Every structure is written in C-alpha cells, then in structure tokens.
Image (cartoon, rainbow, N blue to C red; front, side, top):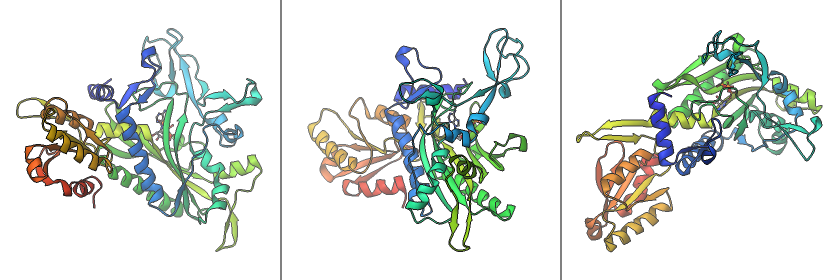
Length: 438
Ligand code: ATP
C-alpha cells in the first residue's frame, strides 16, 4: 500500500470511519465496515446524491428494489452468460489472478499460468430450504436490473413522459477475483444508479447529445461534493472494451494513490435491457407516445456511481497535512461542509466551571436541533481543535467567560483556523449559510 493510502486507512480506523470487517476473528478478506463517522459521511453522500438527482428534479423518480430477484432476470440481462472475468491460476504457487491484470508469468513466483477460465462474478445462493438448481438465486451484481423490471410499474403509477429517469441506491455483490485497495474494490459494495429513458434516437447525434449532457451532470455532481477538477478525468472505452449491451461507455477516473482508476461509469445501453426483458418475460414493455401515437421500446443512458469509491475519493481529496509555526503537523480533512459527519463542535473553555458548562450545553442543544453537533470538554482547547480537524468538522464554537457577560462565542473555521466572535442568536443562521450556502 502506498504511504498516502496507509495514512488514510489508519485515520479511518483510528477515528471510526472504516474498520476491517470481522476484525476480532482475524478479518474477512478485503471486507470493511463503516464506523460511527463513516456511516454519517456515507449517508451524507447518498442523501445529497438523492437530493441532487431525484428530489431536486421533476424528471427522475426513485425506487428501492430487492437484492434477491427472479433468477430469470439475470438470464435476460446477459449476466449468467456474459458477466465473467477470465481467471488464470499459477501452476506453481496456485495463486489466482484476473487474466487482464497480469502479464505472462506469475507476479509472485514467476510460475506459468493455466489457460484462462471463465469465472462468473455473481454470488449464488438458494431460496427456501432446498438446495437444488431450481431454487438457485443470485445476489444482484448491479442495481440497474430492478429498475428495468419495474419500468412498467413506474410508468403506470406516475405521470412521467419521456425522457425521464429512474434512480436507485443499494448494495450490489460481485465475487471479485482480486478485490483490494481498501474500499476501492470489494465483494459487497453500494451503487447509486440512474436509468435515463429516451425516445429511440433517429440519429447518432440525438443520443450523443443526451450522453454528453449526462457527462456534464456527473461532473456537476463531482463539483458539488468538492472533488478537485485536476484529480479526475474522462476515459473513453475502446470498441473491444465495451460491455455486451453498450454502444458507448466512458469512465470518470479518479487519481487514486494506487493509480488512475474508474470512479464512475456512463453507458449508452440502447434498448438492450428492456427488449430482452420483454422477450424473456413475455410482457409488453413498450411506451406509448401520446404525441406521435407510436409505440416503442425506449433507449437508455446509464450514469452509475459507486458509493464506496466516492467515499474514498472524498477522503483522498480532502486529506491534508499542514506544517504549523510550532513545527507540529496538523492533519485536516478539508471536507465540503455539506459532507462532514459533524457540522459543528461545541466546547466549554474549561470543564470544571459550572456556569460555562451550563451555557455551553444551551448552545449545544440549540445547534443540535439543526446540525450534527459534537460535544467535547476533554483536554485542552488545542487538542479538541486537532481532533475536530482530523474528522473534518468545519466549525468549532467555544464558550468562554465573555460569553457569560455578552452572549458571544468564538466561531473557529477549520480551514483558515481564523476565529470570529459572534452572538449566540446569530449562530444558527450563520452556520446554515456557511454549511449549505445561500
Ligand atoms: P471495474 O472495471 O473497476 O471492475 P466495472 O466497470 O465492472 O468496474 P461497473 O459495472 O460500471 O464497474 O459498476 C458501476 C460502478 O460501481 C463503478 O463505477 C464503481 O464505482 C462501482 N463498483 C463496481 N465494482 C465495484 C467493487 N467491486 N467495489 C466497489 N465499487 C465497485
């Protein structure tokens, strides 16, 4: 692991963002759990995404489908046949690798590889008490299919007209051959996906315009959550690389410390999925166009976002080390305030002065109604600031003796470390502005 990644992984464990899964049992290969701060950050990512793409728009609605679904879905979608990686095994040390990720010889012992074998990435399980082929089911490897199979339901229960989108956030499972790089590639992860349904395009320009629009929307989202422009780029898939359903795919790649790799994907899936589900289910999945009086199967543009990769990119993007005048190093997570697990921390200057504690508790209760607020009366103020800097809390408030006299407190900014004095009455509004803008 690179030094930068080690710092992030260690901060995550130390402060409660991410823990190794099943740690007291020696862990569970490349699996991770989100801790108290991690779950806040992850929920903030998902809630902001939902607001940005679903609630703030009139042309996108959400669903929450099952992880287990009728296994025929995966035949129709092509996953039982096509969703595989090529696996090679070293004849000498028997380590297994993805064929596209290694050269001719084993990177560990130099041994020769077996011929590549197809390895399907879907997790299999059985539904009900009988473990037979006819009871076999899969854990979904993507959230998209629940959207396609509910297309008709959404159409019939809403007044949406093309173009429109259906969004979903949820877990997906892939039996990855080589998981790793912390939460970058795991076997259980979360996706945020949109299927954007359009009229069958008459010209290439029509779908390319929609595609480019979505690329812009995805960049707007990255900007909204504060990912630096210089740290991501767009990579076009070559013809050979395209998935079985796609006519054009772009990855938005992020400069991770372990290499520039896929953060998000954008694909033009044509009418592949709906056509296949119509064929396999025997149910009519066409759309009736009131304007032209035509019936057709819509085409689809799919922007897809990994929650865990967003989480990791945000941590990497915001992790900063600053040398202070006294030569100490200050570690700061310069998170966009909207994303921060705690928006504000409240400190009484001293922990043993009853009047300070009482006043500080009042401020704490006031702010807690609106913001995730941290209470801290341990150690000295300097230490409390360091702690909040490390977990990315954008604002700290200290209640001191002057507060008792004139109801003003100090408000300290995480990034500039500047402090201003402000009246308690104005705090809530001021913080609202600083955190959410406007
Ligand atoms: P990769 O090439 O990295 O295996 P992919 O192209 O198979 O990824 P998609 O099928 O496009 O990935 O999945 C959509 C999104 O889901 C990805 O952009 C990524 O953010 C996330 N994702 C996919 N696989 C994983 C995984 N194993 N762990 C964490 N996130 C993942």
